[in-house]
View (cartoon, rainbow, N blue to C red):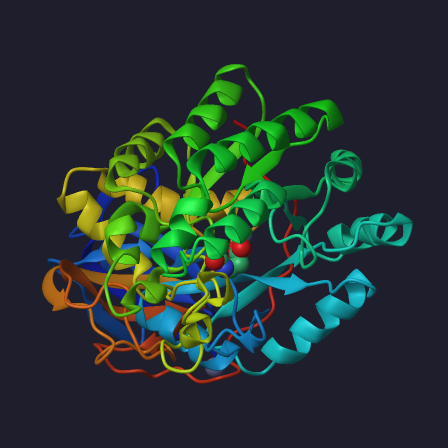
Length: 467
Ligand code: URP
Ligand code: ZN
Ligand code: ZN
Ligand code: ZN
């Protein structure tokens, strides 16, 4: 039986257009758009009509960087695929791309199978996977080809975390050469982890154990150096490169310079780097641990370069790097030793709202908001135009967004499975009202109407982002 819903009278915003239009959804897809109050719009009939007058009608968010249930530092990220995707839906995100992990000594396929087992039947919204490559060897390289054919078209490598996820330059070069051949995209955690570990040891020896020292040892220059090295290795390999969680002015400069030279290098930043700073890391009574992530939060002065990069398209994507650990029992593992604080911040529910606030604050335009949060991540990771836009044939992943509603972010009201909010008490204007995932309402007028298992695995094509 066909189910049709028409959303009337809203301002439809995509990466390229803003227009008052009625949107018809049928059988999980966008069937048609027509300018509101025209005969063409009146001809769009449906079993169900939703009035979106005064609201925005936007594509569901695409969060291309999440870590549900990630094992890290002897514990696990506190959101499961069930709780994390539900929170994502609440925040207007309808697709996540999570990171499956290859453990050292195991195959990519084993890691991927394990992540499928965690996610399958549990997700409220659609999901896809990148693959973390921790063990580059001949077998792994061959497997990369198979994964690309199977819809896992991007691979994260780490220049940080020696002994855990770390790859040396030779391993990175080999993986990049392979991705140049098979169409995969290497995503880089660009920090010089070998040098950082020396600085960590020296800091701890001086008795510098508080969370704020996490930010001090993970220097901006060591992010920039690794970013530069990754760019040059990619250039030698003839491969494109996507640098994740860019936080330092100097790293943005490396990306901008490479892009000016015409290299296919891309960058992502995250809300925590745009809205938080080392002031948070320095909060007393170990509260700073709530803000420990890598790359680390930077002094406030770095934010301007990130906003500028987002405006000039030297940075293309804002994803969350959602990787929550409860303050109680998890972040606390690092009391007396900042290097034992599990790295990561919660944020999958907050991204669309924080970036809408950035529109109001004049950092980006409305269309750029949709571009960096929906369309560009979908293009970058081979999900466009199925995801990331509102156009005939696209999945009916649609958010009705109230741009005037006020909210105060808080752990008391959020839906992420974590005992604090990184944005506690922050007032923002704008709020998700209703969310459709493939035409099914998963949030309806501030009520959760979705269910675990509605979300399906979504294989991806290769990167479609060419400039
Ligand atoms: O601190 C972070 N970012 N934790 C998640 C793992 C990673 O490096 O992305
Ligand atoms: Zn990382
Ligand atoms: Zn991450
Ligand atoms: Zn369902």
